[in-house]
Image (cartoon, rainbow, N blue to C red; front, side):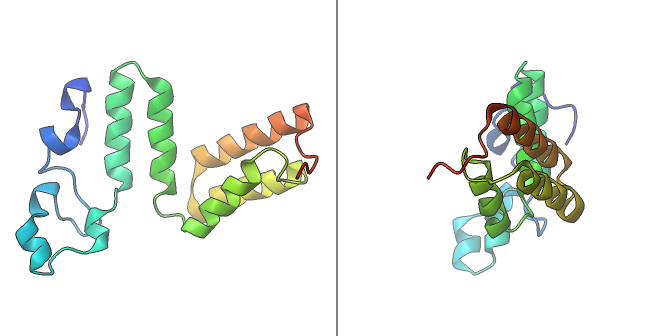
Length: 140
């Protein structure tokens, strides 16, 4: 999907035949009958990077660049294992990371292993800010 605007929001209502899950089923394909027949899997219900990027495009067209960036970051996280996301989240809480290097290492992991460049940049920005503000002191 490209060329999306605010008029395309919400995609589930305006373009249900174009929003697809990992296995290629569209929202229109996900029916009660298909669920009852066992044709729908969890992968069909999870959001995809493509859907999040489409939402980012809509947000940007609506003059919401920060929201668009958040959707783009979310798109990068779709395929990152949940335990990794939670470990990085915990490190980002003030007072949890013991050093700037811990966050820089987390950023490197996200960039090198998961190709999550926007997330890596976000973590690096947090590392610099935490360093400036002295937030690496373990407070709990």
